[in-house]
Amino acid sequence: MFTVNDLAVQSRVPAHVVRYYTRIGLIHSDRQQENGYRLFSPENTNRLRFIRLAKQLGFTLNEIKEITQHADMKESPCQEVRKIIQDHIVENRQKIEEMMKLQTRMESALEQWQEMPDGIPDGHSVCHLIESIGEEEVA
Image (tube, rainbow, N blue to C red; front, side, top):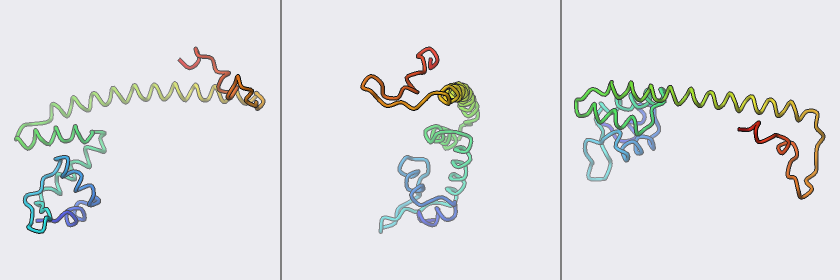
């Protein structure tokens, strides 16, 4: 059995992460000593490793909790895992496209601004560089 600090060292995560994961139900202590210290089984090192791997694949802690709940009930989480990762792939592609559009707008603006003189705010303008970009260019 491990204390929080022992489990943290064994799993190579900070102790506050072990406490947080316990608080949100991702890992469970097996029992609590009279002094209030929680004790964890060695299997929790595997659970923490799983959580770390899932996070590296982009799963959220809520998604990981759902997956581990299936596993705890001896149900295969694989179908749900495939769906979640497919949804993340679609979301990521959309974000990449949006970032590429933003990058293009930024590069275009900078190119345009290279030839423009510095301006001083006159009460009608805050920064004429930004204001020189048309609404249609930003949309």
